[in-house]
Image (tube, rainbow, N blue to C red; front, side, top):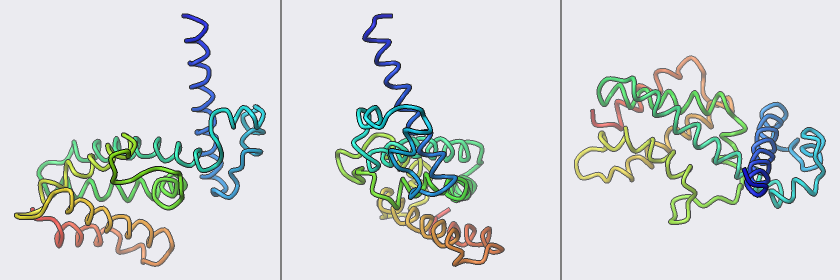
Length: 192
């Protein structure tokens, strides 16, 4: 291994450590607690080292969002792979999405609520975000219905899931009806 390869590997390792530490801190104490000073203390590097990887908190949030998008895509695909038939796939997808949002609130915020400097629904959208949408589209596209563009249907279904995730987390929806909400969403929106 060349010196350059070793340096690149070390740099990538530091970036992963910064992102993982930011995520951990955000999940424990919220995104307001994530500062470059606190991150530098936790990972035992100087602030200039952090700034050599990320220009600031916004880029760190974006990096956490990209990792989260890849994890969410894997969770959605894992849940739908075991399901038999379109209805079961859509139901599994909806539950996996809501479980991901509930289990990873700071990551979910980085992905969809906070400004991480990432482009959505554009040509320059980062691949992990495109792949997360593709994971939704794979199951939802087959139930969009006649004359409905699969991508458009996926956007509407995703918006409904996001609304459920957000309202549930804010305590605006009674938790005892969570399962019934998923059933209604699948029954009323998906053509299965």
